[in-house]
Length: 414
Ligand SMILES: *Cc1c(COP(=O)(O)O)cnc(C)c1O
Image 1 (tube, rainbow, N blue to C red):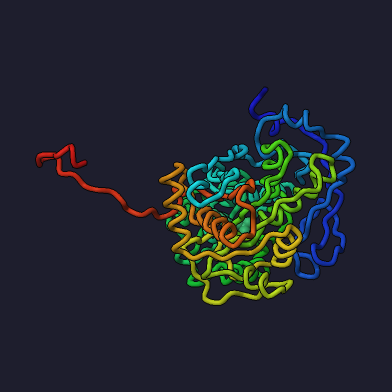
Image 2: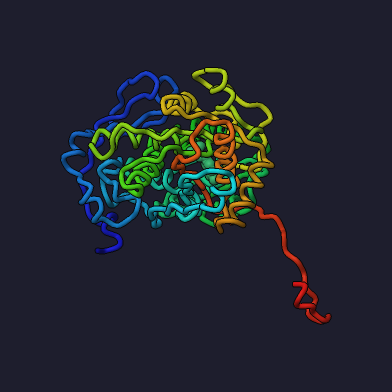
């Protein structure tokens, strides 16, 4: 099998239209769209009966293991517009010692998204959004970012030959700011949070015609992120896990996976069983948790947001009601964890099971522990944690020792 088969052959596509996620209002496919008239995210709809007739599990199994094997459930019409950097399927890493330590008796798996291009799962969303932007003739894009999304956008914009202008909070992890610039984008550090950066992008879109790539303000990042759900189902033999813990900022991945499960059921690949979806946030920025606990449909802005898990430092999410809906329908919960618990989780998993998680990934473990302690899930539940970026992208604790090679060395004491 050729490794690039999914990137070189044309396959049928099944997009019928787009739909406002709040009102259901229809929008034409194959045209450039931002938010709906109601100011809410647009969802891509497919002829799922057509997909069901065109795609079998066996045909799928014979394709290379990358994101593009799901072509019939993806929006890109023409293969030539795919701007790939090698979006391979990510592995499920067992965490047996971690599970035993915190008292879980079922299978505990981490989906390690740090293996993707630009070392985070933002690659899934941005490879789709940039491919679609290219297909629809966009040449200049702008984005507010906490780091990883901007890095992925910069990389794929370079592949597409598109101009990218990116705004991030001044305290964004240094490696992110530098990798964005290294990949050819213009990057500005802004003295504010991600939604303050978003306001600048919105104004620039008006004044300069930049295409706004903010989370969920264009329809295709969800389609890229939904491949996490498609992939997970296939990797687990078309049997979804009992619970998924997802570090939630804008919520693209959680919304995307929930959509993926629905589409997989409609094409006959899975049944009606769904995992409990846990939206994980940091105590210093937990708008979804507050709204979940208050029984609200929407989540107002969280003031003075702060956490070491920068990817989930998102004070306000335009898809708030979609996140809350999925969490409630699934019987899951929105949970907040402290920065201390996040740091401890990262340290413990690396030491016990050898996986260096990002802080956001650590947050999912801390939340799993809470869910166990509070009886929200069974001890023998099969659980998947999302580690959304490589731990190497974040500042690490210095735990090294020094040695003077000129002095006598007491090897027994090393
Ligand atoms: C962006 C990001 C998140 C949050 O993802 P959403 O789907 O936008 O909620 C979590 N972790 C990391 C490492 C991220 O970069």
